[in-house]
Image (cartoon, rainbow, N blue to C red; front, side):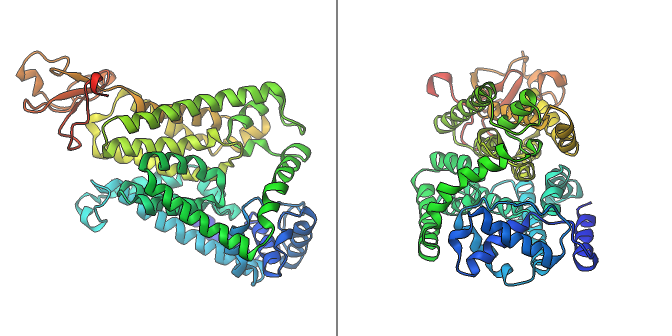
Length: 472
């Protein structure tokens, strides 16, 4: 399906008299034109951006709404598009399509590495014995099934850059390269709503080295902005809020494309009308985000105080990424492509430790499947009704991922539901499904229960994954 979309986009770019796809690149192209011409202070000037966009629409013969599309990113990110601004728009759009496709392919390979590798440092070639067709098909299925990948490719959004940077940062985190993880995460701030929570959790979990990496990248980007675009940083902070207010409150705005609690409550209570967000909507929005935020804090605290293991780390990363849309005031549906990372980490744990999967994990699997299918219908459903189903589905997925970070571990003297050695040594999947899977028992290692009905051997992750309540 993705190949069909790419072929169609290339054909449309080369042969159609009017180009009707890939228009989200236009604000970035327009901002880069201004920077290239020495007018970086005009990036956040609505009249200046609108004039450039109108001219580009006419010159490139674009089939699109000529209304103004604002540049919403920090100033430094415009430099990324300056080389493209030296080309005619259609050529620039084609090159950007090729770049996005390449980044997607690289991202899929890195995600596949997370699934097939038994440890974060294992090479892709070293896991050759586990690269059967089912494992190799898992990552493309998880990434390409939901709608966001088609939205990002069809609109020519910069989401594939975000996905690639997030995967590299997660890979460095999982390999214990704290400084590199922080440095790469700092690049994600070209879209602050995609970086803030992830970078914050990383800084707390990895400590001063990750913070140093974030600071080095931040200082470098700040210097680039101040030296090459004097005054533009102040314009970003002072002019962006009025631009966002005009975009969302004063103009016809499709709140169905937002996947935040604010969008959910606003559509449900106020409907599809322009105007200020009402006080009840704001109250419910803050209550919803506050509950997720408190759960995220609990997950981080548990991660710091609990046993350090590969599984606990991956669960925290997944919870941080999947909670981002619920804690940010602005999060578009195509950026949900980044949820491929927590989905793959969850799948990797399932492949690596199938005996440790609990009943709540099965519910999480069902929620992921529901999200992947529903994402294809939500833009139309939420646009024609007063219910944005993606938001509660994300809340359910985030809640279950956060629960995986904090669910209690209880020290046991012997495995429950076992009265003798014969019963201890029964097959792994002999228990009913509704009680969870039981790992085959041994008599020379301690046992703990991660959740009611689930046994985990202390030999699973090296150092004991379970501690007595008094030692937590």
